[in-house]
Image (cartoon, rainbow, N blue to C red):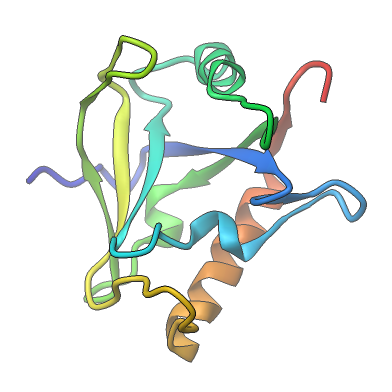
Length: 145
């Protein structure tokens, strides 16, 4: 398991209504909550893919119930929390769209797995809020969103 360098930038593609509040124009902390049963949140590495390619992929992943709003850029060094969170490089195949994601990485919570109907511990909630605020500060809007 290879960790992303602290100087790298990662992008979290954001969808409304789940990850982005269109009225407030802010990223929601839920954008950084792993799916139920997981401790990982998918991101893409700007060292591997250009911002344009990341935005293009985000639009490709849009569906009837989720509108692509844009991407939030985070610096790995600003979000790494020793013993709590790390960013792991994890290239993978997107079988739905038949694309190899060489830029894929995961924000990994080391001691937290999301559970249905159960709120995350206060320390994790604060961290999700911090990530959302950082992503809001460096948000790149998708065309036509």
